[in-house]
Amino acid sequence: MQIVKTDPCRSSERRHSRRGWCLSASRIIQTHQLVGAVFKYAANAGLATKNIAAEINRRHDLPETTEAEQRYLTHPQLLDLERRRPASRP
Image (cartoon, rainbow, N blue to C red):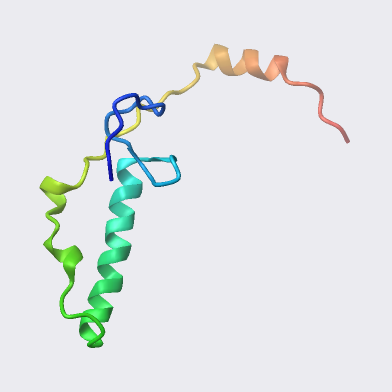
């Protein structure tokens, strides 16, 4: 995959698919795990000579995931949100 410098996803850890969609680091890791499992099965079944996904070093070759910052409402913000909510229908 090619890294695009003008990244519309606003993250240096995202890559673009062939269709132009942004791929997060966790999606790339999940895809590597899936492809690795498929190649492992194919190698064990004799359908592939080796598992090429196993040659990729996850620590060095794949992007790192980052923890998302947790944001919580304060009690006054929660009460204000409740007051602004439209009345529920019966």
